[in-house]
Length: 186
Image (tube, rainbow, N blue to C red; front, top):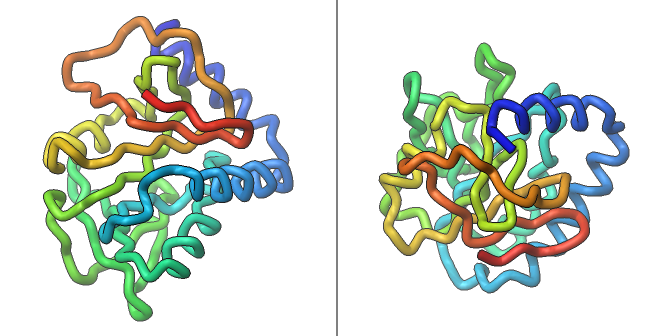
């Protein structure tokens, strides 16, 4: 399937989800993450969920990271394609931007080369580890600035598609994708 078609299909599927089902599925995803070999690292990039778009609720993952005393990096949109990473502290101010994306207002900037693990939002993904986001390329740009060994973990409320047909050369594949039902390894 093509990315544009997958975006439409999965936007509609998300619309049909209840708050309770998103919460339940997000908790299952967070618990399943504990099975991954990713917990010996220090710096974890975590997106904050857009509730209006019915994304995976990452607050459960944040609790796990805080409980394990990890450095949590939150993204802020810098311009039309770039993200800046701020270290989450007790005093980090969070505010929704004009697209309803919660992000830090400012803080301690951490360069992408320091990131060990990136948790990625996505609309859909396939059995080869390719993902479909919202189409702006923010995460592809970020991942290309990270070290080659950065661990890329997709978070999805739905199972894998067979194949995304229109993969671009700049698309960065996942190492793992975690759903409420299983872990996909690529």
